[in-house]
Each structure stands twice: as structure tokens, then as C-alpha cells.
Picture 1: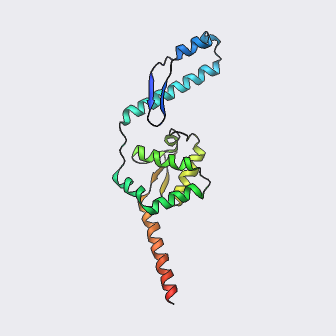
Picture 2: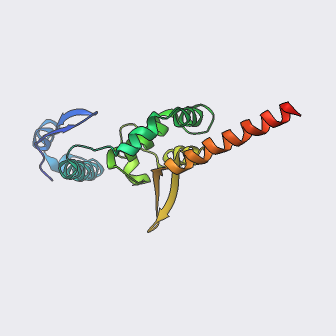
Picture 3: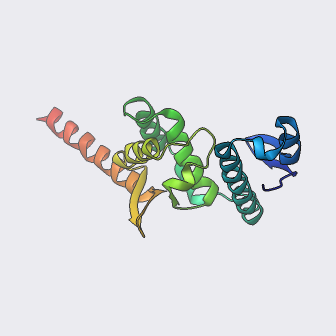
Length: 176
């Protein structure tokens, strides 16, 4: 049975101390712990180790300046709000997709989004990514068999241009 007795702190998730030996002592001899529980514990331990490694490698997240300006744009905020309110995507998954892209500083796979708090279902990640892509806030691509999502600053420029053209057409129609 793997041995973990480290304090794990993940920003935004709080902290957790896992002591497998103490767990084994509490439930008795590890031979009496059901095999599926042991397997689940091994899986969880490996996941914690993987997340710890990513956290150590990542350092402090840096948000590209263009993403900061992009997300502060009123049109982007309107489109994100629309994605949250008028699509089949859950609001928390829309936020998770954006947060994951910001955290990575660029495109992320759906699997990477599922590592965000409260975003564990790739189907819902896909819905949120597609809702954002339909509103041109994000792009969805496939690379090496994995779907990836990234923010789409040029797409919002297209939305703005379309709005301007529509407004000019309205003005012309009003003058006629």
C-alpha cells in the first residue's frame, strides 16, 4: 500500500493531510481493507502526486496582458454572461473553462479543465467550451485526439464589427 503522509495545499481548495498508515490502523490490518478501497486509495494517491508535481512545476500563474484586457472588455463580459444564462452549460463550468485557460496562460485540454475545483465532468466542460465558442469568446480545437479550448480575442473583434454593421444598417433603414 502506498504511503502518503504529506501536507497538501492547493490554492483555492484549502489543504489536506493524508496519512495512509493512520487510515490503515483505524480500519485494522490492511489485508482486511477491501481491495476496491485499496485500489481507489492508490488511484487517489497517484492523482495527488500528479497534481502536486504540476503545482510545483507551475509556480505562480501568469495571466497574459492581452487576456486581462480581453476579459475586461464589456462585449466579452456580455458574451460570457450569455453563455452562463442562455446555454445548456452550467455557470460553474463556464467559469472553470475560463479559469483553466487563465491558469495555464493558453490553451488547455478538457482533462486539464476537469482538474479545476467543481469541474469533474468532461461532457459539461465540452458544453461550456462550446457555449463560449458559439459566442466567439473561445476556440475549440482537437490536437492529438484531445479537445483543447483557448480564449479567442480575434473572435470578439468580429462580434464588435458585426454589431457596428448592424447598427449602421439600422441607421440607414431609419433614414430611408
